[in-house]
Image 1 (tube, one colour):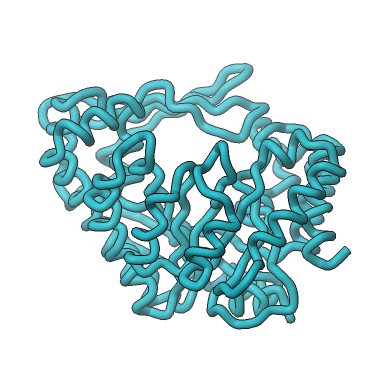
Image 2 (cartoon, rainbow, N blue to C red):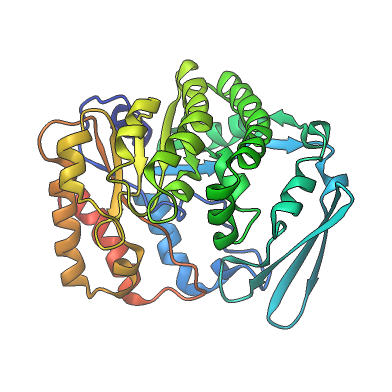
Length: 373
């Protein structure tokens, strides 16, 4: 089977020649190791063998979004500055008679963004944000680049449309502690915020699902309503109500919705199935999660394609012989008995500038074992 055929058969619950294997962001994100930008960690020579391994040997799943344009840039004003170590981005919004500001930091040696200051700090800020007119968030959605990348990828893999859900956009406006308090104590206001984002995301999802049909999607954000942050009853209110329609729109046009949710998913899996999702990731093993892959396969494998469940910390830290044992057990658990399908996948990817020999060897082990070596 070609890599694309293997992935599509997996999503459709059909037999495959072997389990698919993906390195997630590696081979998934748009990475240019030749870009000399000092903030591009991937231009370090230690990354090149891993990037080449992903391109040549894994079942590629490109994480991509449509091109979005609209008037939001005139409302959300950003300025960026740099110093010797970091890149700082300040966002300013004038709404409801208040000036809202946020600040993020990106360091040269680490491919992640820290939110130093969140846009919304209290209920008054939330009330002001809700006064931003919907017209300011309107957007034009263009799938041209998705089709172009799909043609360029050919039979080496598939394009996966990557999208937040309304909860993701809402919760990220606050610090985690402020989000949890407001989600608990101000449900009416919080629902208004979710509805505001749902109007944008439901429209975007319908356009992309219709104009780029039959594709794999990743919906991220439901973990904001997982335990221990919120009780399961609020998952029904804040995720199922707003993310469920996205799943329906995707699959109405022949697509495959994959729910991305780190952490404790034992009590959330029934909701994934009820929403109609086809797949979930990354099914983190205990203690990061609260359910084993074997249990998920046994109880939900007929309903969901399972993507997981290797921890990035194990890839970076376990000695290769021990990591080989972990991968072998994961493959056994992920393919045991009857089920729709399984894709060997880590929970994340390295985000430092240097790839160690141990990390490279452990990624190579993933490929070797799925190929029967």
